[in-house]
Every structure is written in C-alpha cells, then in structure tokens.
Image (cartoon, rainbow, N blue to C red; front, side, top):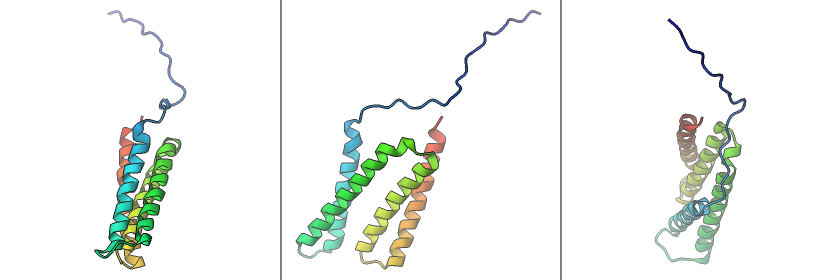
Length: 136
C-alpha cells in the first residue's frame, strides 16, 4: 500500500496581531453615551427629589465627563494590555463608578467600598472569561 508525501507547510513564528483600524463612530459614541448615563445618574441621586442647584448640575457634568474620558482611554489602550490587566482595568472602572454612585446615595464608606469591590470582582470575572474564550 503506497502513501503519498505531504507538502511542507510554513508555520507562523509569532502570534497574529489584530489589524489596527481607524476609530469609528462607536469608538467615541459608547463612552459618550455611558458618560451621559453616569452623569444623569449622579445628578438624580444627589438631587433626591428636591430642587435643582448648580452644584448638582456640575456634579453630574463632571462625573459624566470624567467617566467618558476614562472609558474612552481604556477602550483605546485595551489591546495593548494582557488579558488579565484588561479585565482588571474594566473591573476597576465599573467598580469605582458604582462605588462612587453608591456613596452619593448616602451609604457609608464601608458599604460603598464593598458594593464597588463586588461589582469590580464581577466585572473582572466576566471580562476575563470573555477575553480568555475569544482570544486566539
């Protein structure tokens, strides 16, 4: 019984890097929309059904802008980080934001910290699983 020879193949010596594309409308639209949501959330939590003051409006604007800038920066550099750091960065961003908003709601520092840590751990696990199963 005769067998045939297989052709030699060339193998990659390095991992493939994803192609870098120009930023699309989603690259800035997602952080802006999330920043608006966080800003309104901070404003309405701090307002607590009373009259609107300039300090509450500024709190909402600054909170939304800071979150949008951090989210945009994270989305721009996420592929330069290893998957563990990427997941940790998303966890810190989500946990810090929820902890801050929880503190605006009148919770104690300890309660806000625990809520932020729980959200950060959940986001870390979710993002790590997502990146781990979808890379390569």
